[in-house]
Length: 404
Image (cartoon, rainbow, N blue to C red; front, top):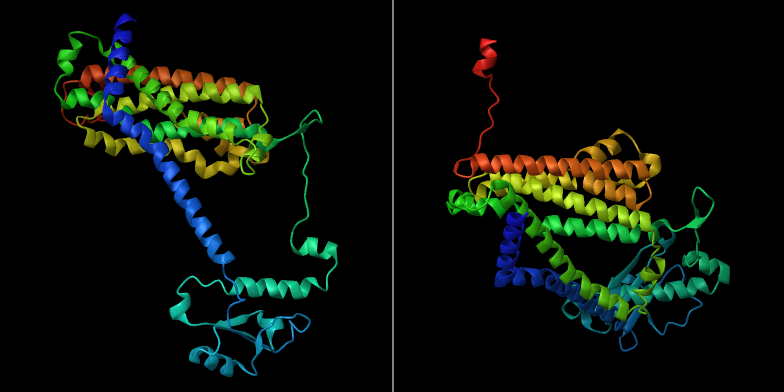
């Protein structure tokens, strides 16, 4: 344990002292914040463009053949035909011209003419006119009819558990899904670093010198523990500001409904935390195993994709995992195949589709798989630490078998 602690301390401090570690650590939340800011800015810009589309200062022409706006005071210039309206727009006598043909009941189409050099690609003249058409219809409807048309009817669904108590499926799933997201971020951000944990010693040709001071077992375990802790440090750096902002702006219209819907289910939350820990250890062991077999980082990066495919595979069968009515053989295969079981089990647990005995069995299976992969990694690194070529598995018949 003393040797493992030494390796753990050395690897952790070495990474924390690297400026590149902190740059990459801060780039992820900063990049997400920038993308969210740009998205919000773009949405605001489009909303302003729509809002500022004012027809009051425009010269507007209208041909309403079916008489849809007969009872609405539009203030538009009445034009006798589509050809005349088009010509007036071309000559600059009108800025915008709306044409509703006689066959509107079948076509449901309004043709809008404007000058391309003034409007460009972003043209919102249809929006105020659509509101005008709605107003003409709403004048003929009752309040109940308007509620149905506008889809403003409130539907309240009450979910009952096995005991007949009211529950919130989404509220109970929020925190477990957040825990699952943490695991996903860890494997996406630290997957490559975990793979490189043992490759760098082989690339630098210092593996044999390291073995004179520490055993392969202590080195592998120490490195894995160090990288796991570094991963959670990154998650903490990213999560703490998000939690702080959520608390500060808890009364915000966008944040308040989410916080209000959170339903704290200790069993699900604790279950997903346990799954996260053993799953991340398994994933770390699988990545370091790939690294121990490969001579260079380039070779290792080509094979780590196999591990990643197995991990994200459950996302393609999400309907089989989140609904109790869709449980079938695929659900159980994904739940108990070691590489796919982390996300499969966490998804099922988040939506209450994982019995307690399966949760315990899944945690135990992942724990055993982690121990097995760790043992394989140690054996592989001991054997291939000074092997600088790609390890090729021997699938042929051994001589001892031929003799038998």
